Amino acid sequence: MKPLFTRGPSAEYRLGLLAILAIALIVSDHYTHWFQPVREKLSGVIAPLYWVTDAPERIGDWADNQFRSREELQEENSRLQRQVLLLEQRSQLLAAVKAENTQLKELMNSAEVVDDRVLVAQVIGVSPDPLEHVLLIDKGRDDGIDVGTPVMDASGLLGQVIEAGGSFSRILLITDSSHAIPVQVLRNSMRTVAEGTGDLYRLKLRHLANTSDIREGDLLLSSGLGSRFPAGYPVGEVISVQRDPGKPFAEAEVLPRGRMNRSRFVLAVISSGGQAVASE
Amino acid sequence: MQANNRWFIAVTILLSLLLAVMPLPQQWLWFRPAFPALLVIFWITRMPQSLGVGFAWVIGILQDLATGASLGSHALALAVLAYFSLLTYQRTRAFNPAQQLLWVFVLVGIHQVVGNWVHGLEGKSMPGLTFLWPALTTALLWPWVAPWLRSFSGRLHVH
Image (tube, rainbow over all chains, first blue to last red; front, side, top):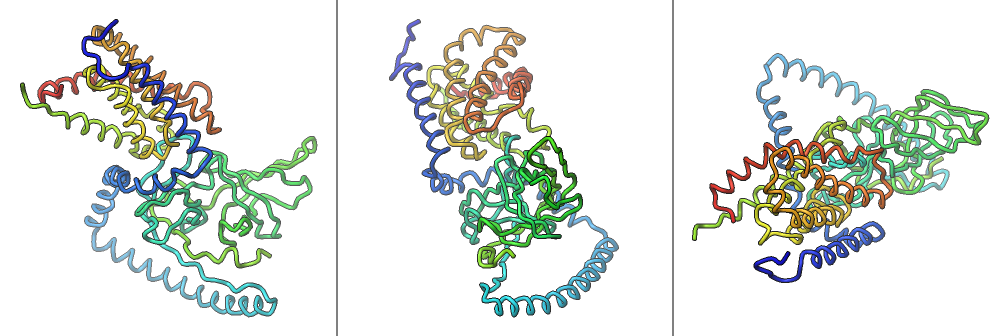
C-alpha cells in the first residue's frame, strides 16, 4: 500500500531506528550510571506528577486536622505530654550511658561516635511497578540527601536512597528483591545478611550455618558493615528458622520492623557516623 | 479551516501519565490498565498522518522518567505498539466495538510482551502470564474511553 502523502522515512525505518535507540538506552541505563544526572535534572518535571497524585491524601490529612473536636485534641495533647515525659526520662538515662560509652570508646582508641542528623520527609508516592519496592519522598539534594542515604521510620530501617533529585528522591526498600543489608543479632552479635524477598512483610537470612545460634524472636540490628547503613538501627525480628539436616545451610525468615507500606513520614539519616564506629 | 486544538492531545497524555503513577494498593498494581498505551492506540488510529512511532517513543521516555523504570523500556514498548497501530488503523476503524476490544487486547498484549522482555533483561521476572492482566483491563476500558475521547476531540476540532 502506498500512502497518499509520504513525509520523511517510512514507519518501518523509524521503528527500527527508535527501537535500536531505546535498546541502547536500556542497556546503558542498566549497566552504567550515565543517565543518573539526566534523571535527577528531569525530576523537577516529574515531581509535580506525584504532587498531584498525592493531593487526595494531603486533602484528607488536612480535613482530618480541620474537623477534629476539642475533646479529641485535648485527649491527644495530654497523651502526647505523657509520652514526652516518658521519653525525656528515658533519654536522660541514655545521655549518661552515651557519655560512658564515648569514654570507653576513647579508652579503647576507637573512632569517635558521631551523632546522626535526621531529616523528616513525607512519602509522596510509590513505584507503579509491582515488582519493585520503591517509595518517593519530598526531600532531595537541596535538603542534603544523596544517593545511599539511609531512610527509616519510627520503628526501624526502611531502605536507602537510590536516586536523589532536587526536591524529591526515590528510596529502595530493604524488602525489594534486589536489596540486601548486613545485620547482626542483638542477643549475640552474630553477623549475617538480610535479603529482600519482594514481599513487604518478609526478609530472608540465607546461608546460615546449621549450627548458628539464632532463634525465633531474635532482634536484628544493622551492623554497619558495608558502610552504607549506620550501625545499630533495628531491621527486623526473626519469626522462623528452618534447619534441615539434609541441606548445607539453615534459613530464617524475618519480619521487618519498619512499616514498609504504612509510613507516611520517614526519617532520612544524613550525617551518619555508621562507618566511623566499629561494629563490635 | 477551523482552529486546531492539538493541546488536547498533550492534556490527555499528561492525564494518562498521572494515572500511570497514581498510588494503588499493592495487590491492584498487577491490574493497572496501561493508560499511555491506550492513548497511543487512540491517537494514532485517529490521526495516522501526523502521529506515529516517534510520538509514541517520546511518551514512552516520559513514562520511563515518571515511573523510574529503566530509561527506554516503555519507549521501546510504545514504539512497537505505535507501529502495529499504524499498520492496522484502517481495520481498527472499521471494526465493531467487540472486535475493537479484542484487537486492543492484542495490541496492548504485544506492548506488555515487550515490556516484560525488558523486565526479564533486568532480572525481574513476572510470574506466569500475569504481565498480560493490564492488556485485559485496558481492553475492557476501551469501549468507554474511546467514544468519550472521540466526541471530545470532534468537538474541539483536533486533527
